[in-house]
Image (cartoon, rainbow, N blue to C red; front, side):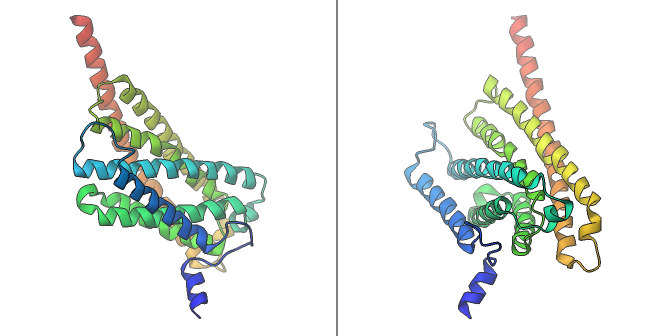
Length: 267
């Protein structure tokens, strides 16, 4: 009885492949939590410059975020390699190792990060990120539980390619390096990676799902499948909203750099 409840709570393994286990989710959560604990206790990732408590917390949280992003981008590549030759039906309903394994890592991270954001809400105060995480936690849990949308994980996970640049931008800002060339070049990398991965490729992925609607929109298909696609769409809308903010910030940074350049020339 307890075993059955435990497996249903943490998603029953599918396919029998290595890593397709509820313990992958637990392991991801524990690794992220322990990594943050080590960073907080040791202070090994903090800069020499003294930071406020809120900035110290966010600094360490963003370090874990960047590490997870690199892992997920690797998962996106492996998923693409596994799913690119699948039939339309298998790409939606087939059981594939890479998206199953890395989606479990993603679920563990989302639970960890939501706990952190709630625990440190006074310092972090990021309700849109909590909403974003909740949306994708619900979608990822259903997807893994039912072994669906394998190929979609490739373009969904690839969106994390912009996360390290976003975190580096924050690190530079906290250190007071906004006027340096590194901030400008990183901002350009963030702008390109975000728009390409989270707006363009994500949008094209949604269009491809719409092309395959004859597979998942049938009356015989459970409602949850349609809800998952709707959640993907809501996630894209959030990305467009954040994309506007990033474009606006990039334009301000380029404007500052241009004014500084003209100021130096006039002296």
